[in-house]
Each structure stands twice: as C-alpha cells, then as structure tokens.
Image (cartoon, rainbow, N blue to C red):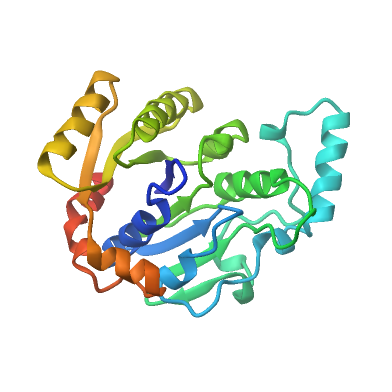
Length: 261
C-alpha cells in the first residue's frame, strides 16, 4: 500500500508519518518512508537515524540532469505530471543502492532531495523524481510506503498522487488547516486516489476536537482519527529524539488498522 500524508505547514505531517511508521511496524509490516519535503529535514531523527540517506535525486542523475530533461520535455509540449526523467528504471526497492536507504528494524527511510544551497533554483525536479519513484515502485504484500509530502498542495499539481493508493490529510486547530483539508480531499478524488480521511492533530480538549470534526463534516470531509496535543511528543520533537517509544504510537494503532482494512 502506498499512502500520501498531506497538510499545511506545521500541522504535524512528519510527526504523524513517524508515528504511523512505528505503528505499522508493530503490526508486522515492512515500512518504507519517503521524505519528499524539500524544505524540512527532521524525519530521520524522528525515525531513530543519526543522519539521512543520500538524496534519490542523485540516484536519478542529479538535479542538473533532471532539470535538463524537464526543459527538453517542456520544449516538446509535455506536461510535468507526465514526464520521464529517471535515468534508472527502478521498480523494486531492493534494487536501490544501500547509501540511498537508511534501515533499522523494518523501517527504512528514503529522501527525494533537499534544497541544500541558496539560489539553486526551484524544487520542481524533486517533484518529478518523487512522482516517478512512487508510481513505478512495486511493493510486496507486507510492505507499506508512507510519503511525507511538502506543505500545501503543490504535489497534486505535479501528479504525485496518481501513483499512490490513498491519501491521509492532517489538520490542526485552525480554519486555514480545515479549509486546506477540504481542498486536499477534493484534489485526491480528482487525482483518482482514495481519500481515507483526516487525522485531527494537536487538539487541546474534547470540545475543540468536536468543533473541528463538525467543521470538516460540514465540508463533507471524513475524519479518520484524532491525536490530542502531547507535551511529551512536543518535548521529543524539541530535543530531536525518536518518537518510537511514546504512548502516541499505540494511540494511533486503530488508525493504521483502519488503513489496512
């Protein structure tokens, strides 16, 4: 199963992805996490790794090569969402060299690419590499791919969701986040993927949770689950510690079971 996790910046996407990864692992799944957010660089320590793997962008030929292929495609009238820019036609995760994957106890991390320097240009090449990787990779029955997308909805325009099975939205207590959840819901449907629902994150009271759920229901957006604000989780994120042993992993088991069902 290939799952995209989407939401506004700061809503807790990377944190939820990490918790989902540990929860799926507890249920006997081999979990692959693709960090496709070109800006944030925090997933690796949330998942217990000392450093991130090499960028898949380098495995795809390098940013300049991908940009050149994109420019040639645009010149030929191609749309970005349909371009082919990989030099390697990978279909199995086992064919990726070890330096591009961090591995630890059935959780593996891959990174599309990051903006490492000022003035290096837009992040469009990262989007095309993510889309092709997600679309082409073939998973075994006991494997899960979690895609941590960049903030917002630009990945929909790049066609990332055309290669996945379902989308999970993350919302926090703000009207901006709730409004974006509706947009994510609608764009998921139009992409051809299944929208599994929204996880209400960081709510501070049952009444606030109910208020957010009512807002979403009024927009026709289903709720997949909820995770209350946690000082312990916040401290772990502040200190750069893995979230593996926090109670929140068990608290979302019902969400991963629902996704598997």
